[in-house]
Amino acid sequence: MANLVVVGAGYGGVMAGKRFERSLVPFTIINKHSYHQFITWLHEAAGGRRPVDEYKVELTDVFRKHTTTIVNDEVKSIDLKNKHVVGRNRPYPYDFVIIGVGSAPEFFGIPGLEKYSLQVRSLETARHIRTRIDEQVRAYRNDHDARRLRFVIGGAGLTGIEFVGELVEWLPKLCSSLNIDPSGLEIINIEAAPTILPALSTSLQEEALRVLKESGARMMTNTKIVKVEENAVHLESGEVIEAMTIVWTGGVRAHPLLAESGFTCDRRGRAQVNEYLQSADDDHVFIVGDCAAFVQAGRPLPPTAQVATQMGDLAARNVMAQLNNQPLVSFSPKLRGTLASLGHRVGVGTIGNMQTRGTVAGFAKEMTKVKYLYELGGMRMVSREGAHLSREPLYQ
Ligand code: NAD
Image (cartoon, rainbow, N blue to C red; front, side):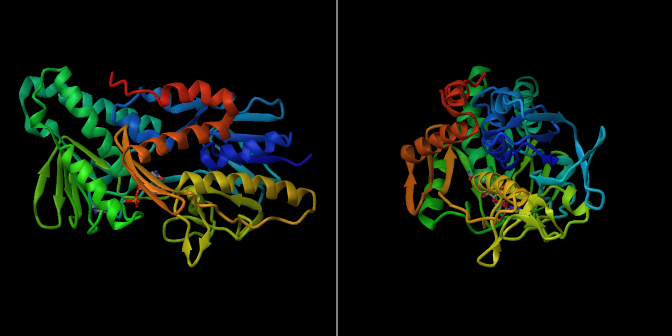
């Protein structure tokens, strides 16, 4: 029997695994943690909406068939020559491997950025951000240092804007609960480009700007961060903003494992794949999600969960086809739109070709959670996880 291995239990990896499970094909999934994290909702966890541990599900709950083997190990590289996945604990031989190891923050070589900023990238970093914010607000009660109530978010892509949307809701409540005057709060979003949310239309960008400004955020566009020090952000203009909490949401690049293992990668570290999602370097290796450079109309597809899930499913189907000497299927992504939440009630975005805003967009965004949970584990998963994730904010 062929040895099938999936590396990484992100959106691409779990959907590959679900496809194998449904076909009762034995496979091994290797992941650093025992759980799958809902990375696209982590701005909520970091921004205080619900307890951080609600943004994960154990892999034993996702994969329940006896044909699946779950391994907790950190994969260090892929040995293409010997067909081994090299884990921290041991090597794992494969006949076919699907790699979905996701992305890492892109720091663009900006001095001090990696060292002095926090990022919304994992359950642990979300927990770290949330704790830091809480500590700063509490410490403000003792020393009244204005830098503790100043929160800088660098980058106004989807992650940055959704995180700002959480902060403008949570922070005034946190201050009030600690008898601190919320008027001292400063939530500052800094974006190098002329506009926020480059993926959306001008009218939706303006709507998001309006909502966030009216909620108290200071939105700075055309403003580039050029250096970061402990508790200080330097702008291209020479201005320095002092803040105890600096969160970087300025973009991502692929996980370094691909380039380090010798795959042919683009400038963002994504490994080249063909139309079937096979690596350009080895047709027994499939690459999915943020770490795959799938070029469509001359540009790589953006690193989104909807692309990753579709890639994971197709990669598993193509592995099974290749094993059975059947024709492989080309990847043809179905892009269903882009939604950005602006806090827990409203949002902006597109559903198909239709533009949406306000509570309708907010509701549609919540519905994407239900849809994903259903794909992950049917009604069992929707009723268990969806019940708390779609409830009112807890702000503990
Ligand atoms: P991004 O690349 O989309 O946005 C980063 C922003 O940071 C850009 O607008 C960029 O101009 C800005 N920036 C870069 N350098 C800067 C500097 N020195 N100073 C100030 N601003 C700077 O990154 P992201 O928001 O982390 O998203 C990454 C990917 O994940 C994207 O493809 C995005 O579409 C996807 N994503 C999707 C969703 C969703 O579908 N709801 C949510 C989050 C992320």
